[in-house]
Length: 381
Ligand SMILES: Cc1ncc(COP(=O)(O)O)c(C=O)c1O
Image (cartoon, rainbow, N blue to C red):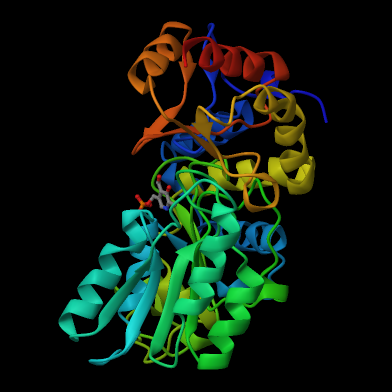
């Protein structure tokens, strides 16, 4: 794969290594958004089927991306916190039972659990990142497995750690949750679209994703897979569109008791958003054209040599198998402020998460940009 910068609206001398914050916009995604915006000019051309067709295409596109065999298990959500709300609202937990999370995970996958456990006098176990600098990822995974017990009702983590790219051993965690009968919930926001994922193989109970990062979509729309554990749940809101036969607009006041198939009940109200849906569809379509495997490989190829130049005595980062290439964290032992200043002066864009410099390249970057970044760090440490 070669650099895909020309497909994006990326101008000026900025070196944008911050897809984990927000992806730049694909030209095709912008075009789809403008087309969607203009649709509202002529409402007489908007037919009832337009409320459903492109939503279904999006469900299918996303299903293919995560190898989910039933596209009706995909719901349109406005945010990860919303997607998680559907889950915590349908999870029962009692005193003495617990939810397992990892240390410093993204708050949208923490607050809903804090609220649920507090209401029910249940516990949260935050599995701490191991101290030290060697084999952190491997040992962290071992600690997660160890912390799951017969008292565990749910394990809810990111597919990778959002700040430093630690890869979790999802298959082993799934096996352990199956042993104790716990639900396994994943926030895929920081890896789906850049790192291969297989719902059919892993069989998580739910996978929630924001759309504006690695899926290349706009802000305000995300996607969620809900497995059979949630088939009979109660949704956050009671949207008319989610009811059975809602396609028949003339019969809407024939109120129905039942919801549409599978995850339809969890769709956000006004899910048919004529701007956001086609934009996210275009983004995911482009991911299919590139191939998620190739995206991860591309990020590795432009990064691996530069990373080798970093002095591990001065800067910590997770090694090989337990770290992604599209998102990784560098933790300098000193001179953090100076390094950040120099990075800014060179118009390099990264994020600071805690004491960690989060670097997240994608297919619009090239090796020269990564080398420039690593050089800047090495010179100023
Ligand atoms: C791992 C992760 N989950 C979720 C989100 C966004 O959450 P929400 O859609 O609730 O704003 C982010 C944003 O940075 C994230 O990094």
